[in-house]
Length: 142
Image (cartoon, rainbow, N blue to C red):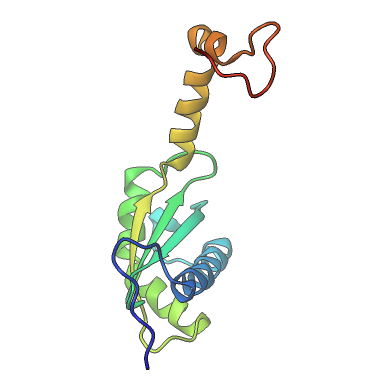
């Protein structure tokens, strides 16, 4: 009897996570070498923060950013142009039945975290988050 397939409501499988992490490492190694012919990629500093794999492992979405900042649009276009070359290089580094198509997306997680941090530091929010004098942990407000 075969195992039931995961429903669409569940997260990625262990295999998807493992393969995506291998692809992330392969891409990071490629960007570290900076072996590109495209002048827009010659001095690029790219951080691959996450890779997400499709259920069939034929598509990988790589979330990328510059060192602590967004990539300029010209570099992002160059990354998309270099996707076939990067796909070939990833296929050599990661043993898969099919070479995955690579899709690049800007990583906005750091921007979002900084926005949340700024919101939490606002005086009105900080006041609401500060413990009340004399309150015990576990006390609930009425």
